[in-house]
Image (cartoon, rainbow, N blue to C red):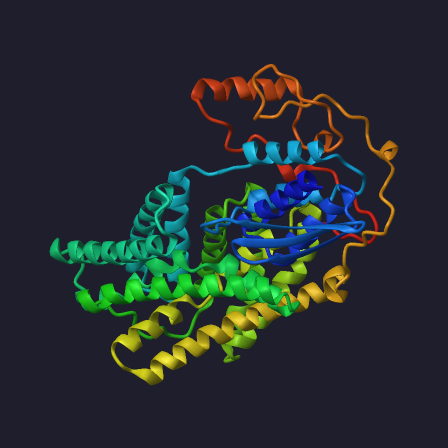
Length: 494
């Protein structure tokens, strides 16, 4: 019982570390526990802690797992959910551990450090376009954001305290923005006053806003998953508060202010630019979330539809929070269709597509006004930011209720339901895992037969190539290419 419990808690921990919602973690663990022969499972999921009680007949065992430094890895979410949706038959603990070993060794960082740094710059530059910043400031925003992301990557690789890393990265991006603007003015490359050129530093720090845990926490709370929702929301608010304080301190020292000139009414040309900026921004943030190329393209296309509807509504004097709700609803409804067609988890589409609508500028302005003791503006900007985020999440939740009966009616994993017979499964084939020594044939399993691209010749070539380079491949598999296998009312992707 202990070995099986450790395997299930390992699966849940990998899902939790990947940043998916607590609801998904619990259902994945229950599917695995049912396939291993347990009679019941009662998990409590936080942002970095899982407490779980396993039941088998009259026996029970409680296991606790704690991990540090929460992160987001959309590719691993996809691979793990593909695995859990195929646990409709009895498996052995060795089968499950071997599949998890394969995912752990192969589904890692897809994008290089340079790609992530550039993606951060493009994403924040797109934010600047959507927030009506002058065109001359957008390249400076991109440079500063890319530098801040580089600093965050360097500190993260050294396992520096996560909130400390956020503070340093936020200060680095704001200082880089200030340095570049002063250099431009010193070299007489612009006739603008330096103070009017300084507002874009806020957009340069928007890559620090934790959109994934923020929206996943609100979705958990909408289902009364209080432990998961409150834990993730506390984490997200801690990161936001740290980032705004850090950037606000730089603003107080340098005199930067987040108050650009009031934009005129948007015209057709701006809406076209906003559509392109939405696509680029969501694609950039998807890269930060370690999404696959298929996820990046899907999320960006969905975001363009939802965000453009929101911008048109706001341009016609509709309240910004109502525009956010409609946009969230549209994104959720479209994602229910396209994510199912593309065979990727819905959360890897809806959350990246919604991040571009987070009012990060209002969050930073709120801290700026607190520093200048303008309480009315500080409270107003903070309230606007909170309302918009809550309404976007409400739209996503409403779309989920309309398209997912399991989520809407709270259907639990039925442990008493008979498992599929093993004879119903495809015949196993010989599979090699990246964790195995080159040339060593792993034990044939029914689980790994459905992992994609496991042709032994191809995999051997990849392993030999990476052995020469001293690393494992960044993208040796495409977990989303697995065939679907829906049973017992289960809907995938969910």
